[in-house]
Length: 118
Length: 115
Image 1 (tube, each protein chain N blue to C red):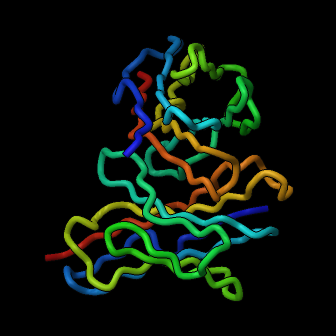
Image 2 (tube, rainbow over the protein chains, first blue to last red):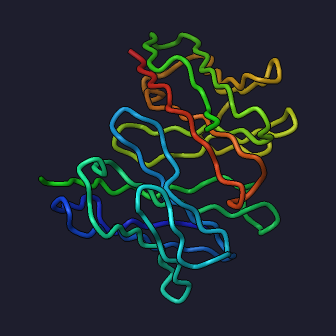
């Protein structure tokens, strides 16, 4: 069965310092992995996705994530936090059709709330 | 950039009433989904829809729920007799294909409050 664990429910950083949001996944098959961001009262916006191509994935707004199969991790990083990065971040796993899982539905982590202090 | 549009953004309904949540997926997408997020909990999969039929549904998606693509552009979620526990944010999503490669585009959600 597929699952995803976000190791921190809340992360607080100062503006201009690095951001690290941790995510571990469990999958019997080659997963597709995503990070989504949800700003207050807004929808889910795709930050980046990994689909078995390059293991270092660059996303929008300066975020990137590295797929590490040996560690079953897909941590999200950003070199320098901005106030506008304050939001909730979701690590998500999908197993596509034909891999013994469901037809591409997504399994969400519990989310990590990122606070950015001035 | 193409968007998934959901209406209304907020809906308040009385327990036992029927509600219909509406979504306009991205026009060339083929796969459609509903997810929900109860306050303080995980985002949960409800149902996926392809080729005018349900392709998968979760345990949450019981007989009180139904989906429809009535006119080739709208994708609706109907709850026949709402319960207090149906209060949640409901997200519609669409995808150009199955699996993660194609990505999923989400709407901004409908916040449903059952009183």
